[in-house]
Image 1: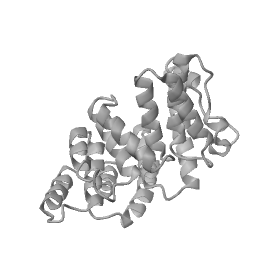
Image 2: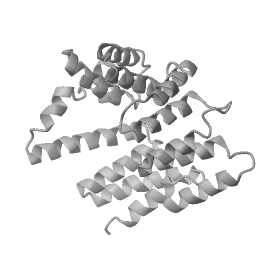
Image 3: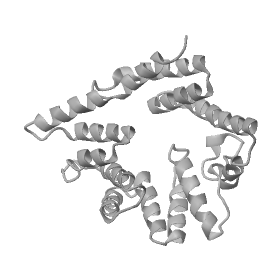
Image 4: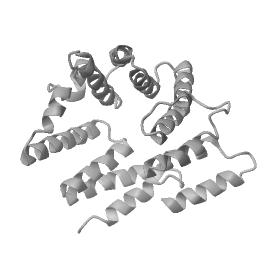
Length: 254
C-alpha cells in the first residue's frame, strides 16, 4: 500500500493540471486507512477549494482534520463541517461531526437533539445509523436521557430484535470471556445477514472477512474475501483495496 501511495502522489504532483480531484481524494482516503492523518489532510486540502468540491469531500476533509488532532474538532474542521452542511444538509457525516463539535463545546443537549432529528428524518435503514445511535446514547448518558435503539428508527434493520442499547454495550465490559465471544459473534452474524441483503457492499465484505480471521474461521474468511475480490474487479487500478484483499487472502491458512 505504501508503494501505491508513493506512485499515486508522484503522478498527482506531476500532473500539469493539478491532478484530478478523485485522485487526491483516493490518496487521502488511503492515508486515512494507513493512520497517516496529517498526510490525509495535506492530500485532501488540494481539492477543498475547487469548484467540484462536494459536501462529501468537505466532510471527509473534516474527518481527516479531526483524526489528525486526536478527535478534537478544531476551528478549521468546524469550518469544513459548516460548508459541507450548507451544501447538503442531509449529509450524515457532516451532521455527525457537527454533533461532535457541539458536544465538545459544551452543547450536549443540542448535539443529542441534532443526532436524534437526523435519525428521525432517515428514509429507511442506512449504514450510518448505528454510529448515530451509539453517539446519541453516549451523549445522552451524561445528560440523563433514556437510551435509544436502532430499531426505533429503522425497524427492518434488525428484524424483530432491537439493536443493543448503550446499556447493553456497557454490560459487555463485565461479561465473561465466553459471553463476550458470543456477543462479538452475534455482531459478526448481523453483518453477514446485512450483506445478504446488500451483496454489493465491498467494504462490508472486507470487514466480514477480517472479522472471521479474528475469530479463526479461515474458510468463512476466505469466502468473504472471495466475494470482495470479485467486487474489486471494477475498482480503479490505483485503489488499494484490491491489494488489501489479495494480501489478506494470502495470509489465510490452507
